[in-house]
Length: 195
Image 1: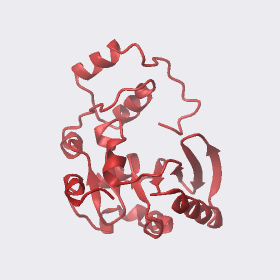
Image 2: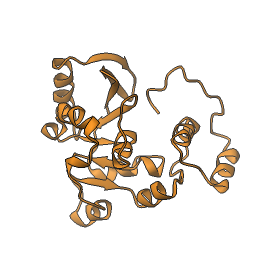
Image 3: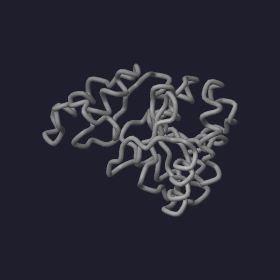
Image 4: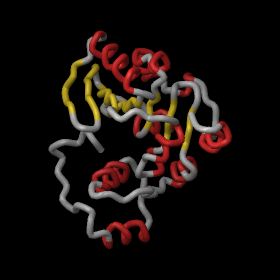
């Protein structure tokens, strides 16, 4: 993990596992992520931060290295999860009303994981005890602002997803996206697992 001073920049508040909505407490306990040094990040962590259930949504899990990833993968296979999809980015499992995505790329540190996100409100990471946020995340959640941190060819899929969650980009962000000739303006919901 990176230098403690760098990590303090990202550790905004120390919550406890009871902040995960009671409807999802059993889901979180089942995942047993602390055993594997794993974290939950992105949309599920954002929903939990906002007191919402993840039913009907993905829970994205990052492991710190390949060994822990393989151990987590074995755990999911051993505990009645149905593998439903595999992409370059993640292995997706179904368990009841929610999906678990085991992200294939290990995260070397929480700050590096946070910095890898393309949208500020998705920069929420938890191990169930500690909660980490990007520099603008808490303010953007409060303001319902959709801040794009990194533009890439498929950013619109992510933008639309978080826009439907009630976060809105400002006019300058929209204009930047319109002006970016690399962005794909074709949208297909054929495979929404990786966004």
